[in-house]
Image 1 (cartoon, rainbow over the protein chains, first blue to last red):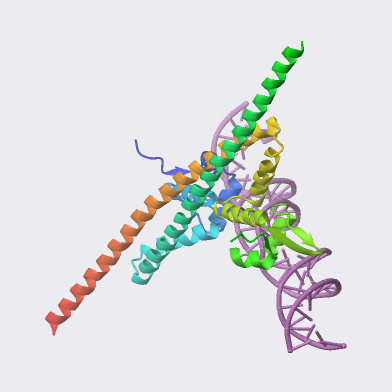
Image 2: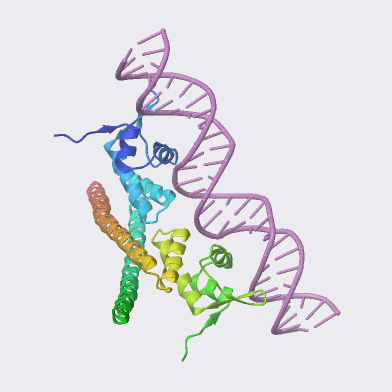
Length: 142
Length: 142
DNA sequence: GATAAAGTTTACGTAAACGTAAAGTAAATT
DNA sequence: AATTTACTTTACGTTTACGTAAACTTTATC
């Protein structure tokens, strides 16, 4: 049961629910580097992983340029250059700080959504009460 | 010690580290509704809160349009219309789902950053070893 | 062999979120 | 009175992340 190793552009597009245009654009920007058979793009499972990372990055508010920077840096670490490795470590630190900020933001947002929901439910309950009162007063009047 | 209740555009810009251009743009898009003294904008603490929410939203990857939608909906809930209240509740649910997705994304990213950092540190350790070996061999050769 | 289906390049168009002058007003300072 | 300082509006420019159309090739199907 080996993992599938190559993908067509439309296979990837369908799997991740993006347009082929987007995939080609990501290649154009240097985020994907599919092989070619003639003109046709052939995506590897590495490309697939990168696409997944691109999209997650987008959901997290990262620009394509930011994501590309990470990809490039990561590739450079494979050369083992000490300077690059250290740079990668500090960048990882920065990203961690960003994630902390995002977690805080999310926690705040969740709290505010809790109080917002509570207020909505109260307002709805009030409306219900009024409805019932109106019904009883109608009964009394009948 | 009452909270300050009004702010100039540059006060807000400085506090939140955005340009006055951005603040004016947010007003233009209907996200802020400062009062005026003559032509000059006078921002209330409500405006200040909204600006804070706008920026948090941006950090979380929300567009201005999305944030505006939330603002508008929230304002509408104050009228107490039942339909609006129910709509608000379902939208809150959707946003919660989004936040869950983001939390998953963040958790995934953190894990991958852990392994990335580990690989960096290993590579650095390898480099250190080689350096030391070279030094000892130099000593032996001398 | 025609024709559809999936792929390609090239290129212009667009929405979002501002940046960046340009030109003017209004109040405070020298 | 002149100038600095903080505002204002108007409006064109820019970047990002694609959409969309045109014109073409390659492969599969009838």
